[in-house]
Image (cartoon, rainbow, N blue to C red):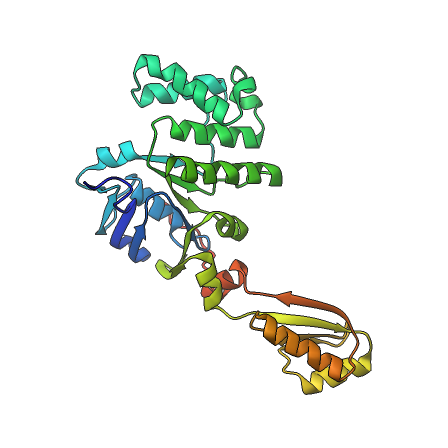
Length: 320
């Protein structure tokens, strides 16, 4: 018997969307396992929000096939909506209602049985550490509290797939980390699938099991964070020398990718393995070159992002 965890949470084939002559999405394929975090990265205007709107049945694709937890978004949109939750970049919390009232409103909209509504609201308030603020108007909440309430409201209907569009925009570092912990617990404790769009590369690196990079309407790379990092170069060792003599000697004898004559700093290509680093240190020692500072840089998601989106799209997605 096939369960929700056996089938892909999100499966999309050849999704296309255009507004007039402007192609926003050009043949997008996705296969996202249930109970995982998938991050979609890309510059402004790359099509991230359009993709989320299509997957969540807000707009229709011009072409392609999409299934969410096995349900076709065109043929069975009600089943898709029952299986998903959407938390946008801007909070959907009603500031005039208390935290508890916001959750009860969502319970009403999800048509939960009357007896279950109050219990579900109380459980979510406790889970998101909002019990003490339950009877305060949401307008009095901090940014982090409003975001937690927003996520709690998304969970009222027990969705299997949650779309998070820029979930930590505008939050302070502590609130961002709290939100990350909540997202991870949703996946590990309840096997919820998270579809995340974000501009924060460290957020994607921290949370995502798989990452896709969307650029000019196409997926230009997909894989785990480590797989993507291995695809690009950029690893190097930065050496700052104690004197001009050692600096000039090293500049002549080592493979140098860049140099700074003012600070006596050289950048040397480096694969990131210990053996290569030891060989470099042995060579410096053999030549009696005094180094004041050594820094090793291994490729990160910043390197991946800029390598794959070297011609960033600066315009916003067209108005609907």
